[in-house]
Length: 130
Image (tube, helix red, strand yellow):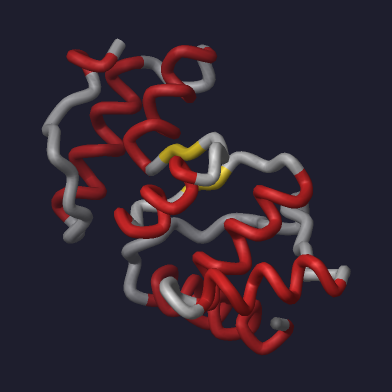
């Protein structure tokens, strides 16, 4: 699992280097590992159908009561069937606008910038979701 985290981190750093992602300080974000035999067993079961990262995050969401955030359609379906709260990037932007962390204009600007850099979104603006 630790090597999976390192691969993910290198992917993130690559996104920053390519200016797809903004540089930022991630020290506030905790890193979780699968700690129990039950988590490992469940991971092995889910990993038969999904990638390592999705499987690990779903296990953590299930066993520790976290929300599952992903834009992977298959993983989101699995999470929904398992009764895990699920959201994707658009849902996160909507939540940030609803909470007042971002204005609607800021949320729409971020979505536009993401789309210009290759992010697929089924909508062009957040307005219809609020």
